[in-house]
Length: 459
Image 1: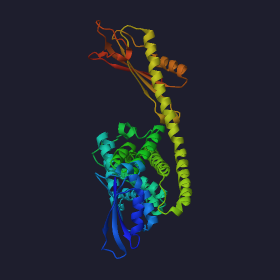
Image 2: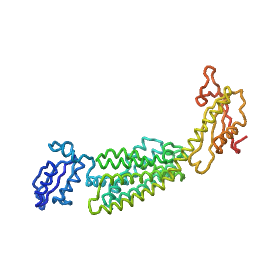
Image 3: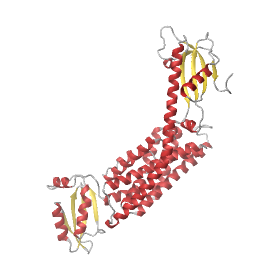
Image 4: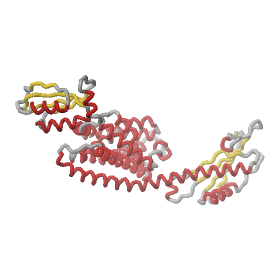
């Protein structure tokens, strides 16, 4: 429920009162003595979805748009007409004036915006290097990039070009500033002893999560944009915090910056693609939802112009997303193919050992080094096989090549196979039920031998 307070200009008191009576609204009127061109102040409760239409009726009754008007949230309203008002205005959407005010708050002053942006980037970059999910979540909460995305959409819908332009500008400059901050921080840390020399950030799980953007990232961003727009439309500001955590704009920007600092253009590009996709999808979904919800410009005469501007902006964003979807599609397909290849490799080698059924010989592990990048640049997958073998059994010298031939024939792709042997003992009381479930014990003084199908490694 909202409590609306409006100043009544001289000579319009009767028409204002008549309008409120027609609307079935309880009101209270107080004499106004502070400003000479107003004769009274009226205040009345109304559901959030009714504020906009009631104010339009009052404007027609003589209330000037630039007059003193306050809309306040209320805890409790007791009124005989309250039930009828709720039935008349059943929606939960706030008025466009409230939406405009909330959008202004979401794009704070430049000093505040960039202070929070730089701090959140530092926190996110540190969390990435520490592989700390909790630290990264903290950066998501502090990050201010979600606000300008919403305010840019509101500015477009309400035909406030300054708000829309500032929202877009803050997003672009903020993204570049976040990447630059992470790059500088990453470079500085490499000059200290705070991180190990020769650190490969691609092996950090939190970084790896943000260097393989796929179509699921697009769905996440679209959903987050819709949730953010709904939270603003319905006055649920606390929901926006959860949305900011879900879409996670700053961590991928920090990942991109660290990629530049560590000389890894692939990491930098992947992180940048992810954050740009997120921002574009948020803008697109928020624009569409605000339009569908029926928000119109503050000046009704500009409605047709807003429609033209909206179509132009939606088209531009959709084209940008479509271009980036080429990258998302390539990553999605290549990720599926590499993971499928890894699983098929494990199944084939398990079957080989089951069919061989050599007493005392167990398959300890199979690992496949095959990433989407390897697939895209046509690099051969590397398969590492670890085999447990008794001391008195001679290891086949050509086992790696035999595995290589089998995998190449069944999977239709060249592969490099490396086989390692460990001396293993298996107790008589229990027979391993699955080769991969076995945990062979390495005897003291045991040795490891390596056989490989790669020509440079074969002996």
